[in-house]
Amino acid sequence: MTADRTIETIMRTAPVIPVIVINDVADAVPMAQALVAGGLKVLEVTLRTPAALEAISLMKQVEGAIVGAGTVIDPVTLDAALKAGSEFIVSPGLTENLGKAAIASGIPFLPGTANAGDIMRGLDMGLTHFKFFPAMAAGGIPALKALSAPFGQCKFCPTGGVTLETAGNWLALDPVLCVGGSWMIPAGPLDASAIQRNASAAHALS
Image 1 (cartoon, rainbow, N blue to C red):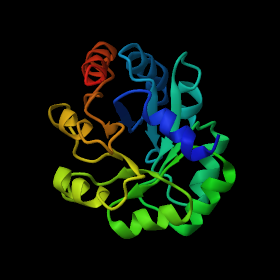
Image 2: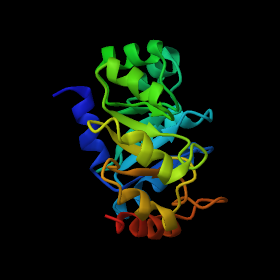
Image 3: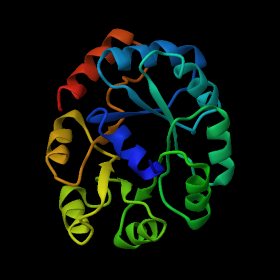
C-alpha cells in the first residue's frame, strides 16, 4: 500500500480532522481523549508551538488516536515530526524538496494546494490527495468545484475558515473526503467536556 493510499484511509476515518495548536503539554492527553471520545480519531497537531512535538508523542498514547503533524514546511520539520512519532504529516503548501522527502520517508502525506499548479506538481510526484488551503480565502466552495473539475482523480481536505455550520456543505462535494478545522477546541483553559461535545457534533456530520 502506498503512502498516498494510506492517507486516503486516514482521511476517511472521520469527517473532520481537528487542527490543534497546543501551548501546554499538560493539555495533550486530556484533549486527545476528549476528541477521540467524541468520535474524532485523526488529530493534526500543528508545529507552531514549542509544545507541539512532545504533545504528539503523548497524544499517541491515547487509545484510538491517530496523531499527525501539521505545518510541516520543509525536510527539517518533517524529520522532527517523524522523530516525534507522527503517523501522518500535513503541510500548508507543496515544494519539491518537502514532497520528495515526505515520499521517501513513506509517511502518509497531505500537502496543501490552492491552485492548479500546486495540484499538477503533486500529480507529478504521484500524489492525488491534498489539503485545499486556505479554503475560504482561496475562494471557498466555488473555487474548489472549479479547481477539482480537471483533476477527477484527486481528493481533498478543505481547511482554513471551515466551521461546523459550513462543514456539511464542503463534505457534500464529491472530491471532499473530510475537512479540517479548529472550532472543536474552545479558546481558554482546557474544557474536556466542551471539546467532547463539539467533537460529537462534528462527527455527526458523517
